[in-house]
Image (cartoon, rainbow, N blue to C red; front, side, top):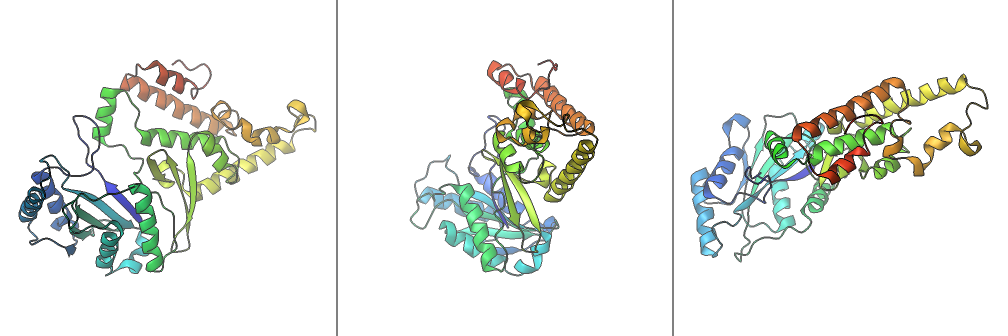
Length: 347
Protein backbone atom coordinates (compact mmCIF):
# COMPACT_ATOMS: atom_id res chain seq x y z
CA UNK A 1 0.00 0.00 0.00
CA UNK A 2 1.24 3.45 -0.92
CA UNK A 3 -0.32 6.78 0.00
CA UNK A 4 0.56 9.79 -2.14
CA UNK A 5 -0.29 13.48 -2.15
CA UNK A 6 -0.50 14.48 -5.82
CA UNK A 7 0.32 18.17 -6.12
CA UNK A 8 -0.35 20.24 -9.26
CA UNK A 9 2.58 21.98 -10.96
CA UNK A 10 2.50 25.69 -11.69
CA UNK A 11 4.06 25.91 -15.16
CA UNK A 12 4.86 29.60 -14.78
CA UNK A 13 6.97 29.20 -11.64
CA UNK A 14 7.89 25.51 -11.68
CA UNK A 15 6.63 25.11 -8.12
CA UNK A 16 4.07 22.63 -6.89
CA UNK A 17 1.18 23.74 -4.71
CA UNK A 18 -1.11 21.87 -2.31
CA UNK A 19 -4.17 21.49 -4.51
CA UNK A 20 -6.65 23.14 -6.90
CA UNK A 21 -7.33 26.81 -6.19
CA UNK A 22 -9.98 27.48 -8.83
CA UNK A 23 -13.45 26.19 -9.53
CA UNK A 24 -12.38 24.92 -12.95
CA UNK A 25 -9.52 22.92 -11.41
CA UNK A 26 -11.89 21.27 -8.92
CA UNK A 27 -14.33 20.38 -11.70
CA UNK A 28 -11.54 18.83 -13.81
CA UNK A 29 -10.26 16.77 -10.88
CA UNK A 30 -13.73 15.40 -10.05
CA UNK A 31 -14.29 14.60 -13.74
CA UNK A 32 -10.94 12.78 -13.83
CA UNK A 33 -11.78 10.68 -10.79
CA UNK A 34 -15.12 9.52 -12.19
CA UNK A 35 -14.09 9.26 -15.86
CA UNK A 36 -15.65 6.34 -17.70
CA UNK A 37 -12.47 5.40 -19.57
CA UNK A 38 -10.92 4.25 -16.27
CA UNK A 39 -13.68 1.61 -15.86
CA UNK A 40 -13.92 2.49 -12.19
CA UNK A 41 -16.68 3.43 -9.78
CA UNK A 42 -17.38 6.02 -7.11
CA UNK A 43 -16.77 4.54 -3.65
CA UNK A 44 -17.40 7.60 -1.46
CA UNK A 45 -19.18 10.92 -2.07
CA UNK A 46 -19.97 13.40 0.69
CA UNK A 47 -21.23 16.11 -1.66
CA UNK A 48 -24.81 16.82 -2.70
CA UNK A 49 -24.31 15.68 -6.29
CA UNK A 50 -22.14 13.45 -8.45
CA UNK A 51 -21.92 15.99 -11.27
CA UNK A 52 -18.43 17.61 -11.40
CA UNK A 53 -19.82 21.08 -12.12
CA UNK A 54 -22.31 20.93 -9.24
CA UNK A 55 -19.64 19.64 -6.85
CA UNK A 56 -17.37 22.51 -7.90
CA UNK A 57 -20.21 24.96 -7.26
CA UNK A 58 -20.81 23.47 -3.80
CA UNK A 59 -17.10 23.75 -2.97
CA UNK A 60 -17.12 27.42 -4.01
CA UNK A 61 -20.18 28.08 -1.87
CA UNK A 62 -18.60 26.46 1.19
CA UNK A 63 -15.37 28.44 0.71
CA UNK A 64 -17.27 31.74 0.47
CA UNK A 65 -19.43 30.89 3.49
CA UNK A 66 -16.25 30.31 5.51
CA UNK A 67 -14.81 33.64 4.36
CA UNK A 68 -11.80 32.09 2.67
CA UNK A 69 -9.77 34.16 0.14
CA UNK A 70 -10.41 33.57 -3.56
CA UNK A 71 -6.93 32.08 -4.08
CA UNK A 72 -7.23 29.57 -1.23
CA UNK A 73 -6.72 25.86 -1.78
CA UNK A 74 -10.09 24.18 -2.40
CA UNK A 75 -8.98 20.64 -1.66
CA UNK A 76 -6.23 18.08 -2.19
CA UNK A 77 -5.73 15.11 -4.47
CA UNK A 78 -4.60 11.89 -2.80
CA UNK A 79 -3.90 8.43 -4.18
CA UNK A 80 -4.12 5.09 -2.36
CA UNK A 81 -2.39 2.39 -4.40
CA UNK A 82 -1.51 -1.29 -3.91
CA UNK A 83 0.19 -3.93 -6.09
CA UNK A 84 -1.61 -6.45 -8.27
CA UNK A 85 -0.87 -9.27 -5.81
CA UNK A 86 -2.81 -7.42 -3.07
CA UNK A 87 -5.95 -6.84 -5.13
CA UNK A 88 -7.92 -9.71 -3.50
CA UNK A 89 -7.10 -8.27 -0.07
CA UNK A 90 -8.78 -4.92 -0.82
CA UNK A 91 -11.50 -6.07 -3.26
CA UNK A 92 -14.79 -4.45 -2.28
CA UNK A 93 -13.19 -2.66 0.68
CA UNK A 94 -12.22 0.56 -1.07
CA UNK A 95 -14.97 2.44 0.79
CA UNK A 96 -13.49 1.32 4.11
CA UNK A 97 -10.06 2.53 3.01
CA UNK A 98 -11.51 5.97 2.25
CA UNK A 99 -13.23 6.08 5.65
CA UNK A 100 -9.92 5.25 7.34
CA UNK A 101 -8.31 8.03 5.32
CA UNK A 102 -10.96 10.52 6.50
CA UNK A 103 -10.56 9.53 10.14
CA UNK A 104 -6.76 9.65 9.94
CA UNK A 105 -6.65 13.23 8.65
CA UNK A 106 -9.96 14.54 10.03
CA UNK A 107 -11.37 15.19 6.54
CA UNK A 108 -15.05 16.20 6.48
CA UNK A 109 -15.92 15.79 2.78
CA UNK A 110 -14.38 13.62 0.07
CA UNK A 111 -15.12 12.44 -3.44
CA UNK A 112 -13.33 9.14 -4.14
CA UNK A 113 -13.36 6.58 -6.92
CA UNK A 114 -11.46 3.54 -8.13
CA UNK A 115 -9.72 3.26 -11.48
CA UNK A 116 -9.46 -0.14 -13.16
CA UNK A 117 -7.28 0.89 -16.11
CA UNK A 118 -4.06 -0.35 -14.47
CA UNK A 119 -2.90 -3.73 -13.18
CA UNK A 120 -2.41 -2.35 -9.67
CA UNK A 121 -5.42 -1.32 -7.61
CA UNK A 122 -5.83 2.31 -6.66
CA UNK A 123 -8.30 4.88 -5.37
CA UNK A 124 -8.22 8.60 -6.19
CA UNK A 125 -9.49 10.91 -3.43
CA UNK A 126 -10.47 14.58 -3.57
CA UNK A 127 -10.39 15.82 0.02
CA UNK A 128 -12.19 19.12 0.70
CA UNK A 129 -9.84 21.54 2.44
CA UNK A 130 -12.08 22.78 5.27
CA UNK A 131 -13.20 20.94 8.40
CA UNK A 132 -16.70 21.07 9.92
CA UNK A 133 -15.86 24.39 11.61
CA UNK A 134 -14.86 25.97 8.30
CA UNK A 135 -11.15 25.98 9.22
CA UNK A 136 -8.39 24.73 6.89
CA UNK A 137 -7.23 21.19 7.62
CA UNK A 138 -3.67 20.67 8.80
CA UNK A 139 -1.41 18.01 7.33
CA UNK A 140 1.69 17.95 9.58
CA UNK A 141 4.58 15.98 8.05
CA UNK A 142 2.27 14.73 5.32
CA UNK A 143 4.77 12.34 3.74
CA UNK A 144 5.47 10.43 6.94
CA UNK A 145 1.79 10.54 7.87
CA UNK A 146 0.75 8.94 4.58
CA UNK A 147 3.34 6.19 5.04
CA UNK A 148 2.11 5.44 8.57
CA UNK A 149 -1.50 5.49 7.36
CA UNK A 150 -0.67 2.97 4.62
CA UNK A 151 0.96 0.65 7.17
CA UNK A 152 -2.12 0.87 9.38
CA UNK A 153 -4.34 -0.08 6.45
CA UNK A 154 -2.12 -3.06 5.62
CA UNK A 155 -2.24 -4.28 9.21
CA UNK A 156 -6.03 -3.97 9.39
CA UNK A 157 -6.64 -5.90 6.18
CA UNK A 158 -4.09 -8.65 6.86
CA UNK A 159 -1.05 -7.37 5.01
CA UNK A 160 2.54 -7.09 6.16
CA UNK A 161 3.73 -3.52 6.89
CA UNK A 162 6.04 -2.64 4.03
CA UNK A 163 7.41 0.78 4.89
CA UNK A 164 7.07 1.73 1.25
CA UNK A 165 8.23 5.00 -0.22
CA UNK A 166 6.07 8.00 0.63
CA UNK A 167 6.88 10.31 -2.23
CA UNK A 168 7.31 10.62 -5.94
CA UNK A 169 8.74 8.20 -8.48
CA UNK A 170 11.92 8.95 -10.43
CA UNK A 171 10.13 9.64 -13.70
CA UNK A 172 10.67 13.24 -14.84
CA UNK A 173 7.69 14.96 -16.44
CA UNK A 174 7.84 17.26 -19.46
CA UNK A 175 6.92 20.40 -17.45
CA UNK A 176 9.73 19.63 -15.00
CA UNK A 177 12.22 19.29 -17.86
CA UNK A 178 11.00 22.57 -19.34
CA UNK A 179 11.45 24.28 -15.99
CA UNK A 180 14.93 22.74 -15.65
CA UNK A 181 15.94 24.24 -18.99
CA UNK A 182 14.93 27.69 -17.70
CA UNK A 183 16.35 27.49 -14.19
CA UNK A 184 19.38 25.27 -14.83
CA UNK A 185 18.51 22.98 -11.91
CA UNK A 186 18.70 19.20 -12.25
CA UNK A 187 15.47 17.43 -11.13
CA UNK A 188 15.89 15.65 -7.80
CA UNK A 189 14.50 12.47 -9.33
CA UNK A 190 17.31 12.27 -11.87
CA UNK A 191 19.90 13.05 -9.21
CA UNK A 192 18.52 10.30 -6.94
CA UNK A 193 18.89 7.70 -9.67
CA UNK A 194 22.45 8.81 -10.41
CA UNK A 195 23.45 8.66 -6.72
CA UNK A 196 21.89 5.19 -6.34
CA UNK A 197 23.90 3.96 -9.33
CA UNK A 198 27.12 5.33 -7.82
CA UNK A 199 26.35 3.78 -4.42
CA UNK A 200 25.67 0.36 -5.95
CA UNK A 201 28.85 0.48 -8.03
CA UNK A 202 30.99 1.46 -5.02
CA UNK A 203 29.73 -1.37 -2.77
CA UNK A 204 30.47 -5.10 -2.87
CA UNK A 205 27.38 -6.59 -1.25
CA UNK A 206 23.92 -5.84 0.08
CA UNK A 207 25.45 -5.54 3.55
CA UNK A 208 27.67 -2.69 2.35
CA UNK A 209 24.96 -0.94 0.33
CA UNK A 210 23.45 1.11 3.23
CA UNK A 211 26.86 2.59 4.11
CA UNK A 212 27.59 3.34 0.46
CA UNK A 213 24.19 4.99 0.01
CA UNK A 214 24.74 7.08 3.13
CA UNK A 215 28.02 8.35 1.69
CA UNK A 216 26.06 9.71 -1.28
CA UNK A 217 23.26 11.16 0.84
CA UNK A 218 20.80 8.38 -0.02
CA UNK A 219 18.69 6.33 2.42
CA UNK A 220 17.98 2.71 1.48
CA UNK A 221 15.00 0.78 2.89
CA UNK A 222 14.34 -2.95 2.67
CA UNK A 223 10.73 -4.11 2.96
CA UNK A 224 8.46 -7.17 3.02
CA UNK A 225 5.26 -7.45 0.97
CA UNK A 226 1.98 -9.12 1.85
CA UNK A 227 2.59 -11.87 -0.70
CA UNK A 228 5.85 -12.84 1.01
CA UNK A 229 8.09 -11.04 -1.45
CA UNK A 230 10.76 -8.53 -0.55
CA UNK A 231 11.61 -5.14 -1.98
CA UNK A 232 13.90 -2.14 -1.72
CA UNK A 233 13.35 1.60 -2.01
CA UNK A 234 15.57 4.69 -1.94
CA UNK A 235 15.13 8.24 -0.64
CA UNK A 236 17.15 11.44 -0.89
CA UNK A 237 15.65 14.53 0.72
CA UNK A 238 12.03 14.85 -0.41
CA UNK A 239 12.49 12.49 -3.36
CA UNK A 240 11.56 8.83 -2.89
CA UNK A 241 11.44 5.91 -5.31
CA UNK A 242 11.06 2.16 -5.47
CA UNK A 243 14.18 0.22 -6.34
CA UNK A 244 12.89 -0.86 -9.73
CA UNK A 245 12.16 2.79 -10.61
CA UNK A 246 15.84 3.51 -10.00
CA UNK A 247 16.86 0.52 -12.12
CA UNK A 248 17.78 -1.62 -9.11
CA UNK A 249 15.11 -3.99 -7.84
CA UNK A 250 16.12 -6.26 -4.96
CA UNK A 251 16.36 -9.18 -7.39
CA UNK A 252 18.66 -7.18 -9.68
CA UNK A 253 20.83 -6.13 -6.75
CA UNK A 254 21.24 -9.70 -5.52
CA UNK A 255 22.15 -10.93 -9.01
CA UNK A 256 24.60 -8.05 -9.51
CA UNK A 257 26.44 -8.67 -6.24
CA UNK A 258 26.62 -12.42 -6.93
CA UNK A 259 28.32 -11.71 -10.25
CA UNK A 260 30.61 -9.16 -8.62
CA UNK A 261 31.70 -11.55 -5.87
CA UNK A 262 32.26 -14.28 -8.45
CA UNK A 263 34.52 -12.06 -10.54
CA UNK A 264 36.49 -11.02 -7.46
CA UNK A 265 37.02 -14.66 -6.48
CA UNK A 266 38.25 -15.59 -9.96
CA UNK A 267 40.60 -12.60 -10.07
CA UNK A 268 41.96 -13.35 -6.60
CA UNK A 269 42.67 -17.00 -7.49
CA UNK A 270 45.28 -15.94 -10.04
CA UNK A 271 47.21 -13.61 -7.73
CA UNK A 272 50.10 -14.36 -5.45
CA UNK A 273 50.12 -13.50 -1.75
CA UNK A 274 52.11 -10.32 -2.31
CA UNK A 275 49.91 -9.13 -5.16
CA UNK A 276 46.80 -9.02 -3.00
CA UNK A 277 48.45 -6.72 -0.48
CA UNK A 278 47.72 -3.00 -0.50
CA UNK A 279 48.96 -0.05 1.60
CA UNK A 280 49.92 -0.86 5.18
CA UNK A 281 49.91 -4.58 4.35
CA UNK A 282 46.15 -4.73 4.04
CA UNK A 283 44.51 -6.81 1.36
CA UNK A 284 42.90 -4.98 -1.53
CA UNK A 285 39.41 -6.22 -0.70
CA UNK A 286 39.87 -4.96 2.87
CA UNK A 287 40.71 -1.50 1.53
CA UNK A 288 37.58 -1.53 -0.64
CA UNK A 289 35.46 -2.51 2.32
CA UNK A 290 36.75 0.36 4.47
CA UNK A 291 33.64 2.54 5.08
CA UNK A 292 35.84 5.63 5.26
CA UNK A 293 36.84 5.11 1.63
CA UNK A 294 33.35 4.55 0.25
CA UNK A 295 32.33 7.68 -1.59
CA UNK A 296 32.46 9.58 -4.88
CA UNK A 297 36.25 9.45 -5.17
CA UNK A 298 36.27 5.61 -5.07
CA UNK A 299 33.23 4.95 -7.24
CA UNK A 300 35.22 4.04 -10.35
CA UNK A 301 38.07 2.14 -8.71
CA UNK A 302 35.67 -0.11 -6.75
CA UNK A 303 33.16 -0.56 -9.56
CA UNK A 304 34.46 -4.07 -10.18
CA UNK A 305 35.03 -5.09 -13.79
CA UNK A 306 35.75 -3.19 -17.02
CA UNK A 307 32.21 -3.55 -18.30
CA UNK A 308 30.74 -2.07 -15.11
CA UNK A 309 33.27 0.78 -15.13
CA UNK A 310 32.43 1.50 -18.75
CA UNK A 311 28.73 1.61 -17.90
CA UNK A 312 29.35 3.96 -14.99
CA UNK A 313 31.50 6.21 -17.15
CA UNK A 314 28.72 6.31 -19.73
CA UNK A 315 26.24 7.34 -17.02
CA UNK A 316 28.49 10.18 -15.87
CA UNK A 317 28.95 11.36 -19.44
CA UNK A 318 25.18 11.33 -19.92
CA UNK A 319 24.72 13.44 -16.79
CA UNK A 320 27.36 15.85 -18.04
CA UNK A 321 25.56 16.15 -21.38
CA UNK A 322 22.27 16.87 -19.60
CA UNK A 323 23.94 19.58 -17.54
CA UNK A 324 25.33 21.17 -20.67
CA UNK A 325 21.91 21.07 -22.35
CA UNK A 326 20.35 22.73 -19.33
CA UNK A 327 22.93 25.53 -19.57
CA UNK A 328 24.08 25.57 -15.97
CA UNK A 329 26.01 28.70 -14.94
CA UNK A 330 26.17 28.43 -11.13
CA UNK A 331 29.84 27.83 -10.25
CA UNK A 332 28.88 26.18 -6.96
CA UNK A 333 26.82 23.57 -8.78
CA UNK A 334 29.69 23.04 -11.25
CA UNK A 335 32.10 22.44 -8.38
CA UNK A 336 29.63 20.00 -6.84
CA UNK A 337 29.30 18.00 -10.05
CA UNK A 338 33.03 18.11 -10.67
CA UNK A 339 33.45 15.67 -7.78
CA UNK A 340 31.40 13.08 -9.62
CA UNK A 341 33.07 13.36 -13.02
CA UNK A 342 35.65 10.80 -14.05
CA UNK A 343 39.31 11.99 -14.22
CA UNK A 344 40.05 13.73 -17.49
CA UNK A 345 36.41 14.52 -18.34
CA UNK A 346 35.93 18.23 -19.20
CA UNK A 347 33.47 20.18 -17.03
